[in-house]
Image (cartoon, rainbow, N blue to C red; front, top):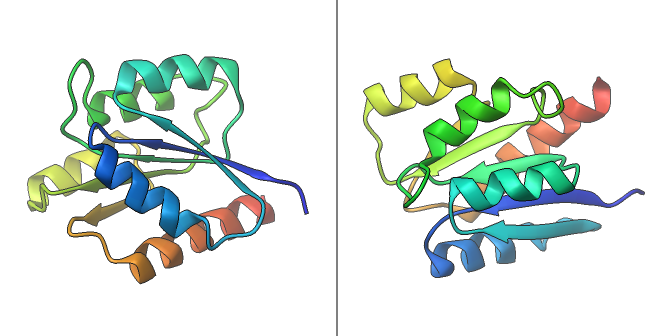
Length: 128
């Protein structure tokens, strides 16, 4: 089985650590981290990822701006994206999905929910 490359974008080191720990349940995952959207874009320009998980509220570039830029990038336009945020309003959820997020998860993050979403998105990628 080929390794899966995942990028976790969140300005909170604690939240990144929690997500990375949850993703370690998957065999062959290589997880990189970024603390804001600008850093994430740099990493996306250097490496091909199979999945991106991002927070919304971050300094320099928020997660929704990041999602929009990724969807307009020919190279990464099909990258599965999960938005993970404390903002659980319908307006934020609708905006994230309209911009191009594949999934929207609210914090506090449930490990079982994260694993289910990641599994479903990567299974969909395999079928393509």
